[in-house]
Length: 252
Image 1: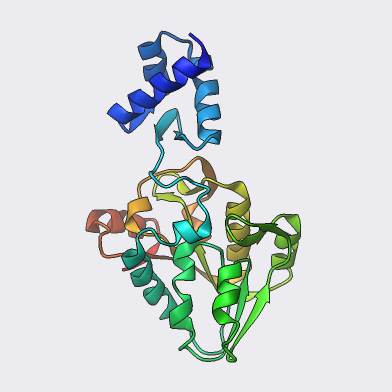
Image 2: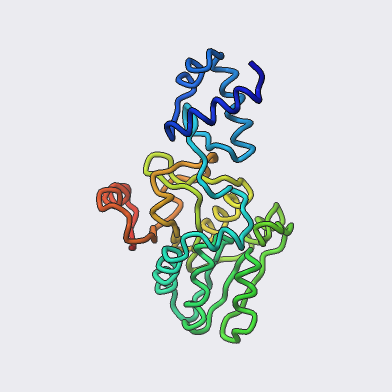
């Protein structure tokens, strides 16, 4: 059985059940577990599924590398709710980090009303949002331009971040769970968010409830990376309690 045929069968199995173990897929296809692991890796790189510990899960409807303008339009009501809660944590005079996440971007319209601020960001949409706002100074992180995500990434961006200190950092994530911490589809975005968190006194993770309990491909940080989780009202109380046991403050 060639890879194209295995690919279709693996995806059909995930359509039937969102999560599958490697051995389960191997048994269903009559293929070695080693071959299945290699296939899952390739399918994950194509964005067709998400690798998990010991298996794979069905990819979210939104392609992981969707352009920022498309991604920002998904779940707008939740994003705006979270953005408003996050902006309320900012005080006049603060120096804050904002990463390139679309939920973080939802803070911008509310921050314009906060007062004098200094914003350090790798997001071109964030820069554009504050271009005509005299009270907000923007420090745009240098680096390589990612045209799809409309953001700056790369080693120079990380070096730039290391040169600054912020009172607060507001970062996003593709996946979050009590077991595996923060997970992402893209290593370059994850590295920038992690660097911002390292340089701030207080770190807020902005994540809608639809991403909580779902792990993406890349594990990049434990729960200790952030101090507060800002999410929406759809987060089950039982899940919030699990985060609180781990020392995470939940704001929703």
